[in-house]
Image 1 (cartoon, rainbow, N blue to C red):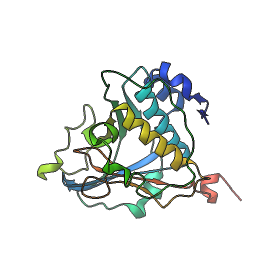
Image 2 (cartoon, rainbow, N blue to C red):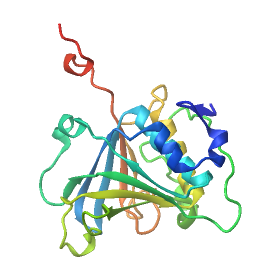
Image 3 (tube, rainbow, N blue to C red):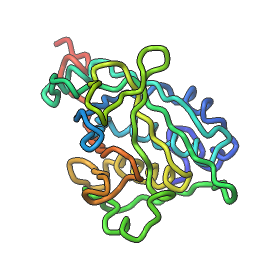
Length: 236
């Protein structure tokens, strides 16, 4: 499968990531951050399968395209309310307002293409035990936070003086190889024909490592669209 949602993977190398974002629209998901210290912070991304594919395509566009950084807007709609049972209103917990993706350009050998072959099954810790032999500086993505432009300063999680109730965005960065690996993982996880566990966990070096140095823990959870009468428009 080399084409998804009307976008050819082969043409991504010639595309501007901003144009890709404009063509696929905003990401309909909810991102929750838990923790109020640098040593414990977990970014949880709840999304339906189609929006995980949108995120994967944007990662690929930055990794192999002509634009190395892009901002992906989030339209949470009523997702935050639907998932309120997952929500803890205490300080140190918040919902994200957007995603910024940045590809660190290597000096040579920037990838020029991408081919996707689905996996038959996923594990909850998908990159274990491979992470033990990889180069975490170049082969693992990094998840951090930054303040929204013009609204708030960058959250200083490590000193405990700033909680996460102010507007902020999640930053996903890394070398192209790392972003491509994350994109493959999200494409696999978005395939509803592939059995998977409840969520995908990318822990820091304290656990089963799946993120680069100085990164927060990241978790993805695929949610099924609501089929209740109110959501599907059944007025009977």
